[in-house]
Image 1 (tube, rainbow over the protein chains, first blue to last red):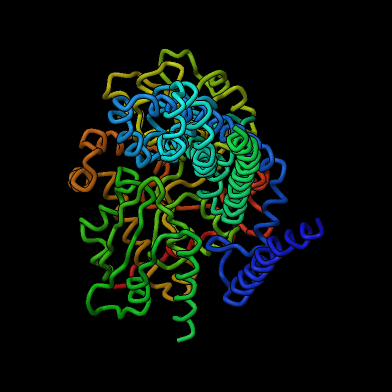
Image 2: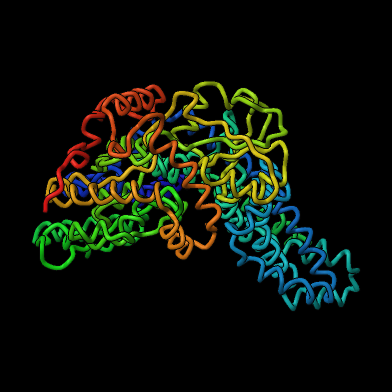
Length: 263
Length: 336
């Protein structure tokens, strides 16, 4: 128990020190080289811009975060369901799985305007774009997890004449949890990208402006400091989602693998 | 030496910041050019794909006005993300086409650009609606979906006037396809461009002019960097003089120029370009304005714009409107 605080310190201190050093170097570079703000703003300018627009930025993070979170949730559920189907039918898997891999590479900036065209502007399209970009990593990793099981365990189940359902619930699904967590982590980062790209094309109304809107606003007005602020906000959002997925995943891992061991 | 190193470091950091690569070659050549020898190479960056609003510059090139001033002007086409302010301030191009609000906002961020001439006196910015939508003023946009460039100053102006309440603002893709599909759709445009394209596709349109709202920044003006202006004022005067002649010629006799524009931008048919010139004439020379006065800018309009941008919280107090433009080129006599 005494180890815990020390462990946290060793985890947090080095990155924080690096961050501090980076900020110092950045500020020095901007000041000494007299770099113009429209090219590279100083850390101070970025912080100032973030504070100046804090109300709008918070609303934007909340809106984009909701779209990313909802999209991620749908991706995880839909992806897992699809992977379950894949794991149960070799024919279906062999037919569809290659497309699942290929569709991971479709450029989202080309898909997003199509989605908006078909489904209209607004939140629903943003969520849909998010689902599309974050779905396939979940499908591929969970399918791998469900189908790559320990040979010895599989034989054990066969020997005991376990039914298909028993195999699925007691062997495949618990084995697949780690893969699910990995896939969900990848999907979490992509979900934020998807939400922002979706917002580029799906537009905004005066009351509903996400991070995508602020990026599009900052660029033509040369407000590079605000743009940096948006980038940082988007990164933080991605980190929060990643951590959330990891925490839930670790909890699930603990539960399910524990179950596996006792049976 | 140190300046070159500084530039290199700037370039590296700028590429870190995500800016596109820099081509430093042409800028320095033009600044140190010797008049009377070969033609001086100069670059002019357009703010969009070549169209009628750039006609005067192409005319100046095609009809030899630039050459008569000893200049070889390369006109670079732009597009949706033509970062004209950054490129001009960063000396990647010598001259560019931009809007007055961009100049002021750029100066706010220490992008040192200065406006030289305004071929268009009235802003062509409009919101295009279907003629049978029953909308005849901006108030009628309530409940509609409008494609506008997010963050543009005129959009903020409309918002401040309360004209965007209950309006769904979506990104403008540059094409009129969506407008043609839906009746409850409106979109931004320039009065000499999108309405005609839509009409050719069978739609009947009406234009709501943003300048009628009182927001009328000089549009598609010629700009350069303060550095360029200070380093070689004579060069700037020559470019402005030739450009004015080019514009005067273009408005009178655009055919040859339009053929050239069509060749570099196939999307612009000769018909659209001809239509564009007709629409441009009253914008360039409104009312009784004489052709000799083409390109003039007034301090008053710049001050008005600065005031409007400040009230929209887009501009701080540090930027002085008077620093943003240079009128010397407009009245400079020709040197033989």
